[in-house]
Length: 329
Ligand code: TYM
Image (tube, rainbow, N blue to C red; front, side, top):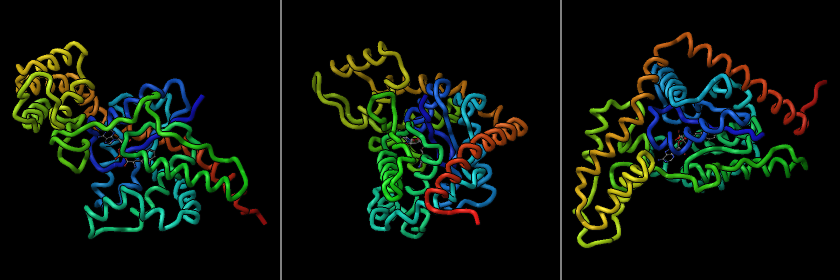
């Protein structure tokens, strides 16, 4: 049995990229493995939320996780800040993480470009906290999207360094996971790049049908194929990618054929895509509302998750402290 773990920052609603990149895999794996899913609320502090926003964002992400099919009876679902062993392990790992390697991380360099006014040390050591999240339960498999590949590589590096430094085989090497196939990068509706929370190019699991139709009808396309079997531009290929995630192979084939013989009308493709998205998200959206309003249920889930997560995390931290050389007097 593998230990599977993943997390989502509590910085806004879940979009289809989060679902198909990570959550869908959890849902499939939770019954056969030892599974941990958590709300990464310490990670969200790098953007300085207000106290009200912090709390509400955690509630939103937790409700959406549960609505998307995570089962707190079989998996351990918890909030990062409920497990004080995580920041302790983070502190210990920070001593063996070098500023040079952290500065070279792509995500850190992106942040310097995007938010030069707030380059805090939390951003620099983000991969170390992520490593602590993962190895605190000795996870083998980490279902994530393509954008987290480098962070996973760093996690393996820090885990390997710890083993090497103390001459132990204590931590297992966590691998990013997507059922043996490539990690996915779900595209946004703006023609280029991935669907993201801050890019304004996404469809959220909580979006109303009207909103989904509006966003999809505005999606970027091109002037249409000029001759049979011409290659697709990136914006059009992205719409096909999304259709493939949500629709039947027959429907995809129908639109592909009409693209190849130049009879395609992008309006029809978008209408179909919007309806597929609505069919997919509607049952989840309805559950989100119900769960979000059920404070007693959320309280129960979080309490149960914290207990189970701390049991596993405190064992790791106790053993790590011993390995490092902390001893009782
Ligand atoms: P976050 O919150 O940005 O995203 C959560 C998960 O969604 C995936 N994802 C995507 N996958 C495919 N296509 C997309 N367009 C797309 N957008 C997002 C992400 O790859 C991720 O799996 N640092 C993490 C949170 C985290 C974590 C961890 C994850 C903290 N500690 C430990 C795994 C293990 C993050 O910011 O994800």
